[in-house]
Length: 91
Image 1 (cartoon, rainbow, N blue to C red):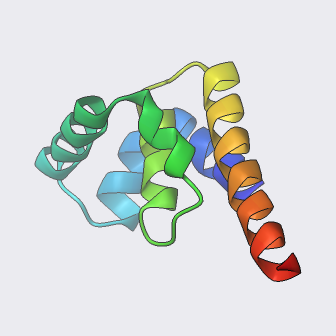
Image 2: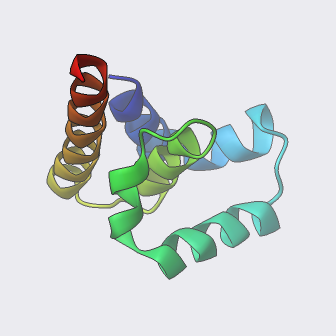
């Protein structure tokens, strides 16, 4: 749910979030978008990672990535993570 909330926050309020609440400038936004575009949509599979996961999902919203792709990529990444955790806990 957190990833979806971040996506829609970026989708509907990108300028407000970056400029007012995060105290970032337009150049910072463009730098983040550039990095997201460099690593591509595949980076959404790593949205479960601490620290970088939330900015990834926010950037996906700002860039208006297709929601279906976003949801599938984030879900697959998180399912794989939890499968690995369960397997490690059972061994």
